[in-house]
Length: 315
Ligand code: HSE
Image 1: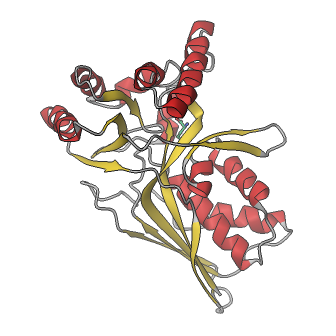
Image 2: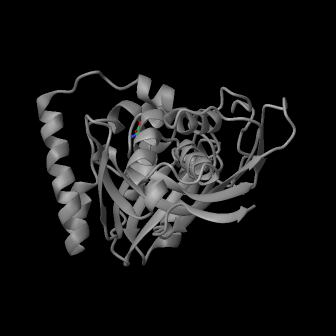
């Protein structure tokens, strides 16, 4: 039996929503798991890059054995019903650039869990799948939208369950994803964050998060400009993303720009704007990075509303 699952990329944080807000984007990884019949062959993992980003996605640092995230996800699901995985062939067709803050690890975890769940006859429900996925990833902000699609606020509660709600993204706001040709690992991007933050910074973010929800709900552009600010992660990560400060500065005077934020842990950047000055925005980002010898791939994308889905299931 063979199961394939197609999972969207995601952007997380989106300004004030550190570790709790994310959005699915129409770029995909497809995870296929096949039970093989040859005993003793163990697990075989193949990764095929289909990325059209400026630089080839770097796959060499992704383990292709039992240490890989995809295998760990499969193993956790089997273990949760008292089994261990047998001979499996796992293939990942990857369009999502790695280590660019676009949820490639969340997509692989969700793809592996859903495919393994299907192979096992669906022992795990949504609650169990999300709980295992967040345990592996460490936070739910990429995992939940990768699974259900859309713009989502989510929280993993103390008992492991994930509580989430979808918000409707205004159709007249554009999301431009700017992917530079350099990587930034989430581990490094998290290592620069402080263990504690000043109370005034926490209050700043609580206000921004409330503004964000209301701004999206009422399509309030002025409120959104205030909402897309953050003091919990962006100031600490600024130095890790070359050119970001200049890009933010250079976009400040463009009336249609509502905000420019780090996508997840970086290195990609999101520009959220009205739809009338997209070419101008792209030129500014491209030229600012080019001045620093950085190439980039820029795409204005819509929100992916479907989330992960099984695309083939051959007995
Ligand atoms: N919320 C996470 C972070 C997303 O910013 O570190 C990346 O996994």
